[in-house]
Image (tube, rainbow, N blue to C red; front, side, top):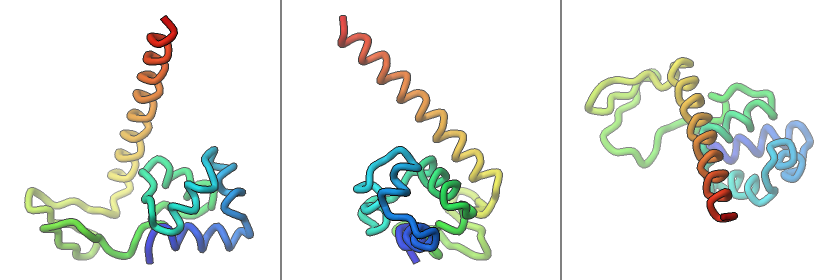
Length: 121
């Protein structure tokens, strides 16, 4: 089952419209529609926000299988990438990814403000 399908299931279980979820996430209904129809896959930061709003575990939203990634074998939650082994169910890994995404978002915001100030000059 895809991430989009799971988001839709959990949203509907709360009797929320796409617009309701979009407002809670400070995004658009179109964004939610695109996620639910698998046209877009949310980044890890947005996916964490979705999980928080829907009151589900982040892992509950992930697809059952890894797709479109070459040279990866998945066994019992461990992925062999050819250059090492990673436990994909590691809470530490997920937290590190989320912190990284938050830092990226802050840097992008700072960059946008800098560009805006330069354009005003």
